[in-house]
Length: 175
Image 1 (cartoon, rainbow, N blue to C red):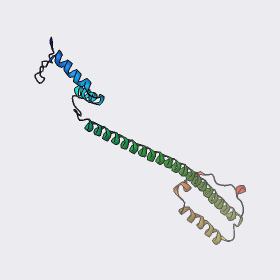
Image 2: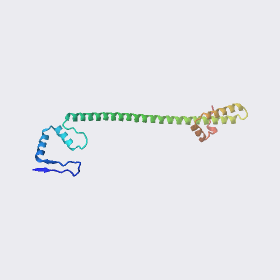
Image 3: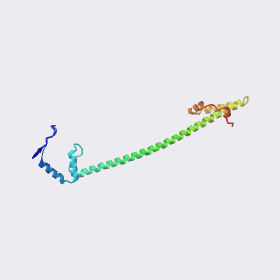
Image 4: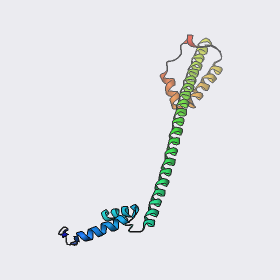
């Protein structure tokens, strides 16, 4: 008894007919093959595109080994890249912490210099009042030195100096 199977009416596909005796013979041949060969046969039967290993098991094993080597190499490369990224992230965090420390130190130095300049200015004004009639050349020279010091201040220092309230006479420490 023969069973006939018709494929789709697509003209690019052929009409195939199978008989039960042929199927039994093919199944016995397939069962006689080792498991690897059976797996290759099965995969070749269902892959429309892709590797066709046929009966060449050595070629299939070589391709599988090559693919495994490539995967291992890519994994190692990815692990190295991850380690590099991790160390770069740690370095960036250390650098950010150092930058914050330097910023704090710079702000403290700016505040100290602004306070010192204000104290010098207030002291000069006090001396000017006390020496109302004498030593005008020396007072002019001290005033001029303070003005010259202002020229070398950063814009941030000048802004803080102008924004800060002037020191009062009782806050001035005499030299």
